[in-house]
Image 1 (cartoon, rainbow, N blue to C red):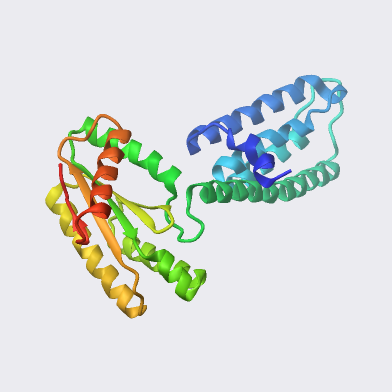
Image 2 (image 1 turned 90 degrees about the vertical axis):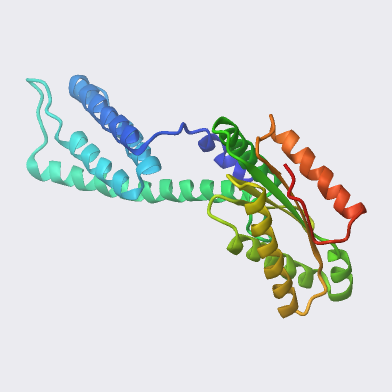
Length: 285
């Protein structure tokens, strides 16, 4: 069984804000304490205190989990029984409290580790393993999100395709590790030169895409020309013959769908590959 198969049930955890998660955890502590109070010694509900601890750890981190763990340990140990039932002696109560705190102290790191593994697997599913930039699936999702926002507020949007044309020749002459090194260098340049709101993705092979929300024709051209200059300088330092071409399409009025945006960019990219040899074509809108 793969790691993702184990983590898949946890990936369906609902999205909760930190205040909501804290209130929910405290509510479970109070509810479990009330059940513990009225059930008395006939029913052992101690393990039910584990749920709010795990809940707090998942959404609030280890500190929040440990704080809820202490509250649960106190509730499980010190809950006042109805009249006629005996309560634990102070020494026994302290011992039980320490045992429960120790138990939660061992469970919380396991929950933190599980959450970390899930986040890591989610990140790997969204990232290109070679370059660390977004992969095609992540790019499509982010493009749809930004396109919807730009459409709603009537903002321009642009997308650029970068193609490392002779990557196969580099791999044949110098070996795949050399080609991988150049692809990482291209991705690094695109990331450094892009803005915080831009999205850099590797679509396949030597093909990269750059999503430019809130970017008009002039700004898109200026940004892409600067990137191309930096790419040329980087390839010279690498003593590489790798050639990068770029095509840019910009929209003053965003299209109705992401498919329309990508189709327009694909069309310009095809024109570049089959027609004009210059490195920058577009933007158009």
